[in-house]
Length: 429
Image (cartoon, rainbow, N blue to C red; front, side, top):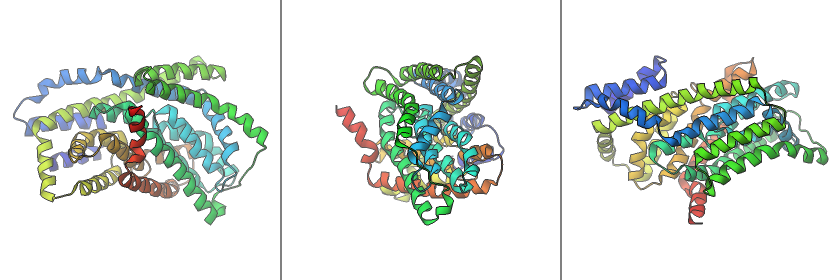
């Protein structure tokens, strides 16, 4: 059954069938060929119970929050403000790309949305100021991946839902690795631009008074992040309720900066409906596939296969890391998560690993898939915003940041407390 599912998955994806439909087709196949019971009779109840889960309501709220911030023009002001604070370093404006992506990751919850936002704002500056197009675009693609690590993350919500893991704990666990990755991206940029100064464009400095005035543009984003995350960890709101509060806050911020209009609301709602519909189709399809796989005995079959290999717990983790790196070349990120979670996570947890720690490790590997060809979504988003040049330039520019992610994977395996320290401390408090 294992090899039949693997071949079926890759074959259907190769036909460019939408991932949500692929998951349903695989579920029907498992029911038809590997189950003695008519599992399809439970499809209606399964679809209803999955889509009726209150936890998933947080997804459209967080998507809408990001859409409002992007379409109201707040992204441009945030980028300009961060430019004044980080452009003095080797690499100049490249650091503003990463810093802006980090701040928007703390509100949008989506990597693709974050990359698209920063690319749209930043790309016009690249040629004007003499930056190397490879490094400049690669940094935007990599910075955008932080959208699924730094809370609130839609992917962490989906992971928590599928594994029945605490979403607030996952949000806390992603904070330190997310910030560390952002700093790692900036550090790699500094090293590259010290070795090859011509890649980093012109380093610029601004009067301190102008830098202080620029901070005003950052206050709304910081305040919004504090409200969303603070209300969750204080116990005043669930992630879903905090997302709703965040949407209200985003509307107020947009109104303060004159970005509210009927057109803005219409575009934000339409974008939210499109993204949420795609996510929900994938999640519901994954739930049906999970149900059929579990009923047909996939878990037992996989456990027997791994027992036959004689792997130690750490050996299993290294095999899982390799699997995600390889699959990340070919499968879109959310799809990769929902397809593998029901199979991989129970095996990892059975070996004594913390599901929250593994969730963060998985997210780093998923981030890597966003900037590795041929299916790295962020690469295509950034290339689309460039409106010229070769796709290979974006791919080459992202390579140093893939190295940073591999280093983070190694650090998480060697020092699990990087992800688990904050959840353990705050849960004790």
